[in-house]
Image (tube, rainbow, N blue to C red):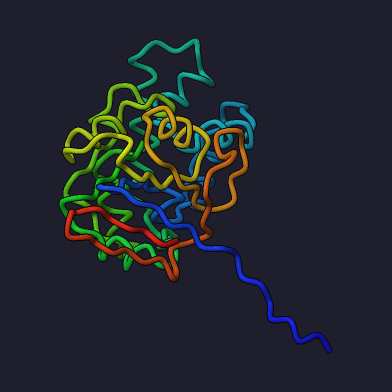
Length: 226
């Protein structure tokens, strides 16, 4: 028998002055719900659910509708968006916490945390409540960010509201569009989950927040050990 002990993956240590989270796939797992809603939407329209879901993840609902129904005028786009969001808001079952997310968010100083999500604010409040994850005081939802991910606008605005430079922010993201947005903002970026698209290349990665810790220095600098 070998005397060697199983190797564990090296931990990542990051320093920052603020932390910003995406929501779906990053703090809460709503995959089953989102896949069902988009699949049901695709059926009558003759669209391929896999293609729609691949594009939709991390993006605002209106951007996905415009992408796959380019012939629609804006009024018709908004009717589709309202119908999709109505279903999402009425069906929170199946939304669960990413393991360790609630404790990790609670360990961070409340004044140094923000959420940037492509979901509307009402859905963000519902999903985080169902999953038992505390909602930060600073929340930028789809209605607060006219140009959504992959544009960096939401993350740049979050840094501004938190009173820090983007380079002093650590962003936790899980999807290609969100990772592109976070990287373009100049923030430090951590991939949550198993996404391996181009925007994830070279970034630190965590499966979940179990075992993650945070220390607050006397100078206000956060040391995150992931």
